[in-house]
Length: 187
Image (tube, rainbow, N blue to C red; front, side):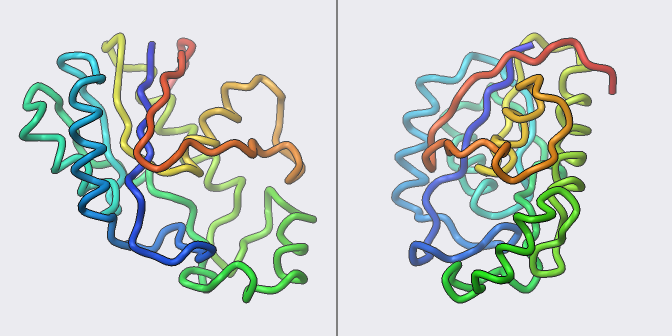
């Protein structure tokens, strides 16, 4: 199965702000440009899901009149990782000690008393398995950088995630897409 992964458009926040699960607004101009570009790229008749966060929903809504053949529902498992009370703070203001505590126990630590990377990856894995178990040959997700990194990690075949230095560093740019092949997975 081919999974089309689209990252949400640019958000209306200053650079360096932690905004994981926060429902921040997407730039409407960038959203319209992304929708127009994606309308010409995505295969006909794709079905899939969208994160429930507004920056993803706004792209799905802008894409809908351009591509009425696309069928998208929402799936909470496609939301970005929840950084708890770190949300809305500048990364520099969170403090080196707090970030170090997270990276030292990367999989289990709950940054900002939010969601652990282990729980986040398990959530994304469940969504990926559900998608792969369907009858379609292709699917579409409109989601977030962290979700896309989690999918890449899960497909990497590197075994169990244990350390921060194993996490993928490359991020898909806002509004861009990539296509990954999903193996047959049980739901």
